[in-house]
Image (cartoon, rainbow, N blue to C red; front, side, top):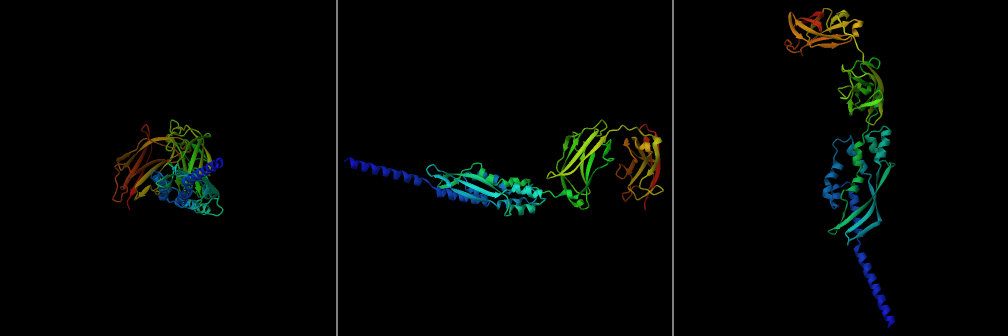
Length: 421
């Protein structure tokens, strides 16, 4: 009797174990999870956005952001789409089948995936260092020896209506794999601008010294070939060693590549009560867009108090651009210049002037300030109420210009002739 009870109990235990094992077996769906993982990974590899979002629980919520990440090229650097396409073409994946877990009862599953793709950042740095362009970069991305990177992900699934769907509310996996679309926005290749630079020069300076200037300007002087090369650059200004100004990205082309500083460019620029930059050492550094230094130079700004000029400092008066008889032919402009003495060239000329056509006063200037070798008085067809002929030039006649100091004393005068051919 005892023996038969033991046999019956043993049979019951075996039956229960078989039943429990059968439930666990039927609860798993590893093959379904692996198939769903392969479909999802393939969609990412082939950049099929519709398939990606269609295999996710909340795919509709990610459609717009994924489309923007992958397809928006507005404002991107040259060759952006081709760069991204080349990088995307290197994506591969491996599913770790040993890591798969699934439970239909709990409606959840997971599996680990390792992604491999070209390390575009490392390749970009190398190509940039070698002076390559976007075409060289694309070639390097797809080279057999291109450096690669790996990304490890765990894809989680939920079972909905007998379908395993990716459970990744924020799209973290696809965004991580596709991070190169954002990175590529910074892949700008700068031409070797240093090859086209001959010198750098402080414009309007006297051997890099400015006296009483409201604006200073460092210019790169390009080679003959460089005059046709567009320069994109930024620059910094330092005052007595302290950074005071950083420009936006500038574009220029030609013989002079210009970097300015003064109140027109920096509202915070320090000036004296005459509007001149304060005295000191000003350093300008110009960079290409890759951060390479194109020019680095320092100038000196001086503030000098000049004396005021008077009539005794006039050496001559000259009608500019006329023949020996002070005659203009078919002209729209006349100009009388005082030529100061050597002493007068160092002084400030404060004056105004009048223009007469025959005996008729036709123009009175505002108060003027000038200094240097030419103290200038202009009159042309752009001035108000100027009488012109049918060709748009000044009418023929005798024109007299009279210079006055600010007290109304005449200090110089001369007459020229305007003729029509």
